[in-house]
Image (cartoon, rainbow, N blue to C red):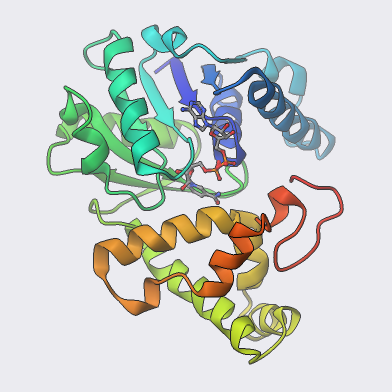
Length: 284
Ligand code: NAI
């Protein structure tokens, strides 16, 4: 594949666009507003500048040249694969997939969703070509974490699954395969752990700092669960938990009230400058 499209240039979309551009692909990213497009492009440019400063890439400007960030969905017509990375909202994703179905012209084009928890089959049903829809779930920060979960649905064409796997590998990722179950492998295991840590804070069991230190020093985790929830975004964490709860109906997936209150208060973690911790630089 040479021409790829990404919809959404937030934390994940910008990261996916970056790794694709670093793999020499032509990348077209669509955002919802000019302001969001400018912010997304700056997020991507900042990440590339940091990668250049650390010697991970030779020329940030050359990589950035391979990325266009626009607001016109119709510009995606010629793409061979489009990865959606918009908000974790089923209605918004269904509307987007349905619109993309009408726009993207190549009959063998792939529609991939970066959803963390919404069953891919429901998104596929919004299109006239469910055989070409697949889950392709990257991890945050995308340029750093080497995993992609590939989730074909019952309707995905095996050739589409294999091409999506090859695409993930071409971006330098290790691909694991999951059935189309809410949360796939990693979030189905991770989210109950994050929610348990939030319940510990809520009940006064221990402080956020001590909970995180406990898991970093006691279990060699690279960061504690509350710092990780802040990094993921508390709104995204809550949305993922709600989808898992809806799918499995198990209390361990139910978002605790403290998480809901923090989201309602706009305390979204790193991206808003405050979550379980404070971040002076604002959005990461
Ligand atoms: P985010 O809130 O940082 O970015 C979402 C972006 O999508 C925003 O910039 C927004 O302006 C844009 N957007 C919303 N509706 C749009 C539309 N109709 N057309 C074009 N752009 C639109 O969210 P984030 O964290 O990047 O998450 C995106 C997706 O990736 C979600 O499905 C989430 O579950 C998934 N994900 C998130 C991870 C994380 O650690 N945050 C990890 C893996 C997957």
